[in-house]
Length: 83
Image (cartoon, rainbow, N blue to C red):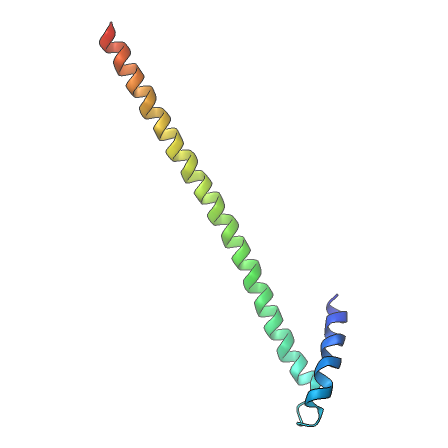
């Protein structure tokens, strides 16, 4: 896929910039650098999002467990008071 994208981009950039003196390969290198940077950012963003989701799930489970413990304590206290 990368080769197809590169050859397509080279052809795409070659025509408009040929008269300006800018080399299409020069533009392609910068385009590739921007693309790589963007893909790295997306990868890191997704990884951070997954980690945040996992952390939120752990916090939700912890809070739910605390609520259950408080309910259990309340039930235990009323049972002791009845005896």
